[in-house]
Amino acid sequence: MSSQAVLMGGGVRSTGERQKLLAAILVGVIGPQVFIVQPGFVQGLVSQLGFDSHGAGYVASIEVWGITSTTVLMTFFAHRFDWRRTIIVSLLVTAIANALCIGVHDHAYFIALRFLAGVGAGSLISLSFTVIGLTSNPDRNFGVLISCVLLYGAVVLYLMPSAYAHTGMTGILGFFALFPLTALPFVKALPRNGHADSAAAPDAVNVGAALKSSAVLAMFCYFMSQGAVWAYLFLIGTAAGLGEQHVATGLMLSQVTGVAGALIPAVIGHRFGRWRPLSIGILGGAACLLFLRGEMSYARYAFWVCLYNLFWNMTHPFLLGSMASFDRSGRVVAYAVAAQMLGLAIGPALAAATLSPGGYTNVNQIGLALFVASWIMILPPVLVHARRRVAMV
Image (cartoon, rainbow, N blue to C red; front, side, top):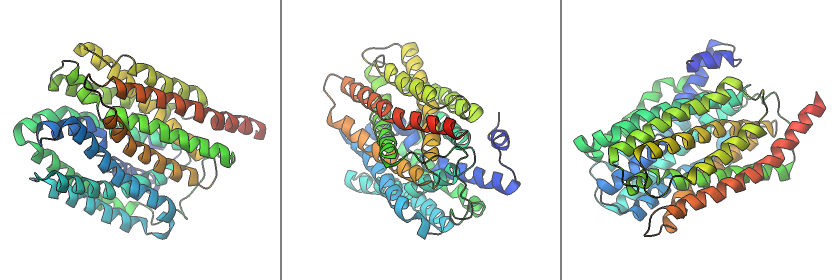
């Protein structure tokens, strides 16, 4: 099923609306273009630029901190900016920062440029998510967005080892510099602000400040876990005795299963509720981490990373759709996206700080604990929302 077909089936009523959503999806893919292939990028930092595993983790973290800084700013100031101009500037900043990284051997300068690239990417993520979060079927449209992000990630992750072999980091960084420029002709399809285009999700119910806070904290914990684990999945594979291409192939396959996971909410929306798929997705992802440790065959590694990515990407749209349903203003979505990026920023650094000489067991343990915490915190607002919706019918 194509993304356009899903969008048309999800209540997108006009050509202009479809163009707006498709433009938002393109921008939403470009924003996390480096993060979604972070395991391969971290491997390149180690094998091509001479970072050790600790240093590579901190580089991954500083880039996400750049994304987070802009995402948090946009939470409070997006209504004051022209969204189109902001996106154009952000696309150019992202492109220039990646281009300037080519040929850089000074680690401090490289880290500073990665932060700048993150700053440019942050508003792309924030605004694209905001546009999609205020549509009439956010679960479905977020599922389409995440499916497209994963398809991009599957292709790029698979090609990264070959790119490193033929061009080193130059080819990868050149691609990251050019890809943002492809969105410039489509920015005109996006709204200038959210006032004229905002439409609360049909099932939106105000659940109160305490439950909204619990939901946002759940988002923070869930993505702190993802940030910790995702940054080291490539190195977990190589530490298990697998070759780089085997690991890259396993991660590429996991992106494909991730697409399948994201298409679950894209196809079914919230007709079966949210607490069941959220419980299956969050706890299922936690269970996978119990098996991604020690020496592994290629089949075992590929199976568990595929299942892990399926659960992650089934859960993410349901989380975002839940946030959109907790009030009628769209503010919870903005806070949740900021919490998501904050968690992703802290996660790799937290994992790097707890690495042990024996391997990556501590990374898995941190990820598992944070998954369980996020599940405990998301259940109360989701269940209260469901009860109030039933009472209103």
